[in-house]
Length: 248
Image 1: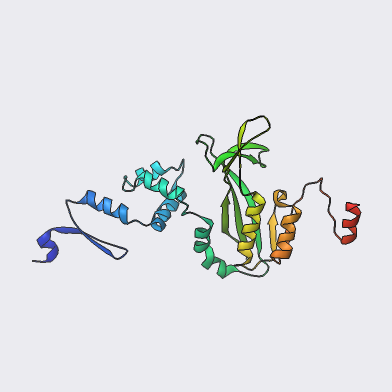
Image 2: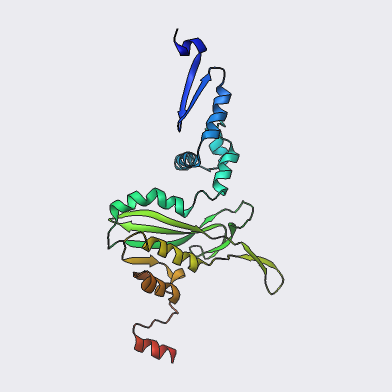
């Protein structure tokens, strides 16, 4: 008699060098062990597939239900709040693809967006942010993305989330929040990170990041050029002589 017939084993799992022998009466135990051994990177893959395949509202509870509750919604929520999903993690995923399309004439695009979360409780990340596409403040998540564009292909190479973690009171004594790290600091960090790892010629951004400090940083610190939109009320000096006339 064979071993699996003698012990009535019908389930064999090999998960990351762990061998699991479970009898036909241990389906619940199999689900528990599977959830415990599931690594963050595998859970992130599952969550990504769930987001791509979802046609409507995507939630941790919805993902858990789609998997017959084999993975609890708390496990998904813990992953999202743990900091595991970060710019560093993103770079590790896209680095091999960037190396295939890298070239000197590529561009780095920096842009900020607001993902509306009007019905979610406020916290450090979910706050009121000005959305320039709508011309008004929106409650949600404000993030800055870095996109590497080369050979008519675009890949995300960095992301930073704006957290309003500093509490202060305005002149009327009303409690408000602001970010301890400005958007311009995030901009320079992302450009520096990309310039140390990728070849590209220009940094592209909208008028939000078009300030003198950012322009000087791109040229002097990162040895790149820039193409930025500027507001119509700004004055531009294209030479030292122009700069002298503007300042005098």
